[in-house]
Length: 137
Image (cartoon, rainbow, N blue to C red):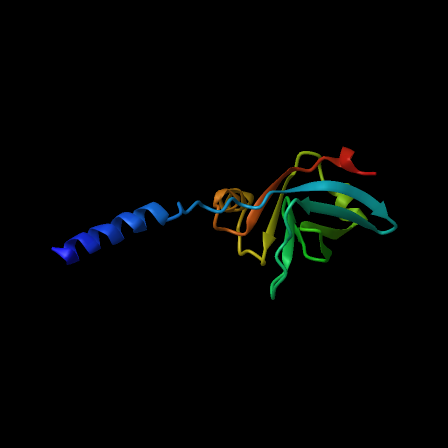
């Protein structure tokens, strides 16, 4: 009988002290600045949390083009990726073109795959919105 009471006590204590596991929310990122500097356009992506720094690279997808030349800074818990695009490429882009970011290069056939991947909370792919050249300064 003592064992049954002891086991019941342990069960009650375990239930009372267990923390509820919550799903980790996907990092939010956005295009914050576009600035032309000579033959390149710097497109800055920011986040209120740091971007992962590891053995892989971040890749920016704009329409059918992808870019992986960038600088990364994580300061005071905030993240910044500054991608460098050729000016000619940027000028050829249309306003409203969907923009995506991934950690690691993705093997994709079309933009629809990027859209689906960006909706998955476990995938390191983010939808940054539509290109707005008015953000340029």
